[in-house]
Image 1 (cartoon, rainbow, N blue to C red):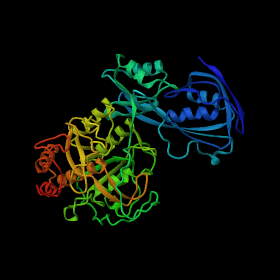
Image 2 (image 1 turned 30 degrees about the vertical axis):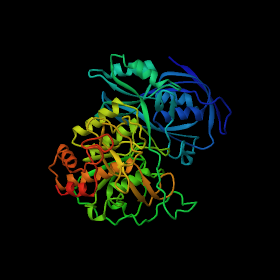
Image 3 (image 1 turned 30 degrees about the horizontal axis):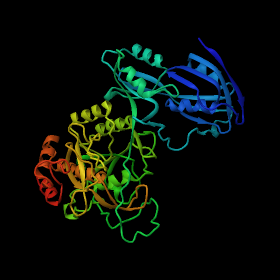
Image 4 (image 1 turned 90 degrees about the vertical axis):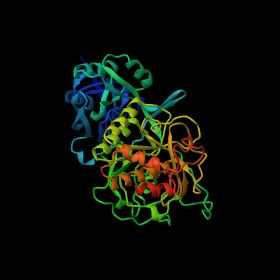
Length: 501
């Protein structure tokens, strides 16, 4: 059943009502409801559904009417009228079997295909909903895990009942990324779906923020230090190419920028926000963490004599240009790290939002013999943050340059150890190059040491490596394990003892 859409076509821009088009894509079927929407607003709905659109500049229309479960090609002929279009498809390997997904669309007037440009150029940042009492999450999205035995037919019936479209999937984790109708209350819908007989887990696609930078006062910086830049600094080291076959460390963060000398250590990159793009890092935080992980920059308190071998780094971009990551991007990054054989993951961020999907993905990584290290947090809130507080994850607090505990570190029974957390970087983070401090730096410091240990002891299990590290730590603070330093500090003595084991 359908009502024919009327497209009032024009070669120029058309004034009209702004964006509330309801679009649903079900493999080769399209449903669309529009009431005087501009074509551009309808195309935004396609992009939100995971379709990459390219368009000839200057064309637009007003769209009225409705399509109900129309065959895709016939529906688009009605929708686009006299425009020409080319469609691109891909196959999603979902937990319940493969799905055909409309992945791209070119829209142009006859003879003008060469003039098309990306409809939404640049890096799309997440549309985030954040309101009191509700954790930040991607607007109009949920993640779904289905119960064993659910059939593809039942899954499609569920999607149709909530007007949803499959955007993507991670089969290894049994997760679907689902796009909902415009202005859906995603947390309320996820809660309602918890009682559905076919749904195992339903969550909003939670969003997490890279921690705010904490700079350390530096003499001679002046009143107007340079903006974000890649420059040389005395703190950087020349490193040797890592040993082939050595253990790899995956750094989950805001990406990677080009820095002299760092390329020797980076053996793989992946943009989990948009895998079709080349990795970059306009934020800067991820590049700082990769510098620590590789050993190009040593944190204050670690002399060059204890630097050890260069670590092979896998740089995973999970955060967008605004420094925000969705759970789906994080899970996609974990899937990549597993496929690349990483032995250690470093996560220099944290959230108080507990997620069953994130926890299960980390547990899966641990089952694949990976060690997960995470920062304890840069605020002393005395509450668990995740992923640091998940079972088996090594939560790291920070030491100052003089070896004392940094009092801004978060603390609690989940903290495993403290490590050097200050460093001088040739790359700024939302500011100029210089000295920074935080548990963000402490996390890759520990992750790097563990990776070096696994390279030197290739037959060691994760449990062997963690036990060796724990036994080497220097007890500081209260005797025994405590809430601020965990089992102790990875100071020079401890690092030397650990790497010699």
